Length: 283
Image (tube, rainbow, N blue to C red; front, side):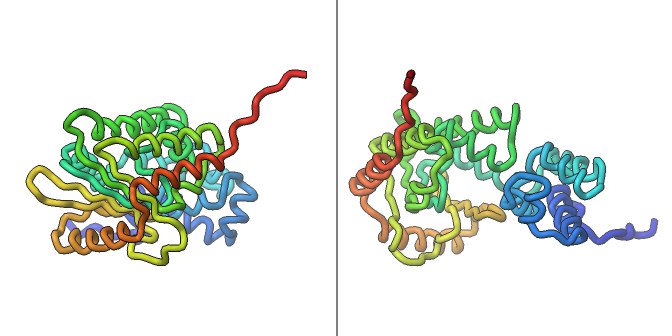
């Protein structure tokens, strides 16, 4: 049998192929992300995330793009294949999640959002919706994210140390009430015996984790693994040398952060700055 001939040279991995087609179609159209957003709707950053593979978007967005590019059904078909395919990124994340459930201690650095383990349902819903989820899938993912908190519950819950960039506390939700709830939730959890929370204020200078959310897990067999994630991809790191190097960087960042008492006070000050929702008045 003759070897299979590559016809297009494009990716055969569904998620990558979907993102690639989006980039190619926009390039052929000769429009910028901003121009695309102006005509089709939605925020230009949403289309940017779809084109770099960070999110797949919603079927409504994809259908609108099919109409705009004159590709009826093509993009939606690619989107459905990408949604159904367990990509390499998802497999690494699934493995990370299984390890998280077994960890004997955890520590994390968060760049711009609260750790998933410390998010309220309201925060999780807005964050996941911003990534393109909606309807039943959105409800399922919110429930799944909140259920992760079970790791930190119970008498034998593992210790969890987290460093929050000040950006986490400034990158607010649209709903002031939900945002107040998230800040209050962080303050409450910072008082738990198994949670140690640090805030890294603005002005501490550049450091090795500036743009990377990083989680470390100490496992039952004594190994430590790390999961590093940015806007483009996530990586499960198990090689000892790489984990140790990343851990040294984390320790250096922790040395720059406020202590737990100062950090809780910092969160409460930010909470006081958030306006309360206006009360409804009758004439």
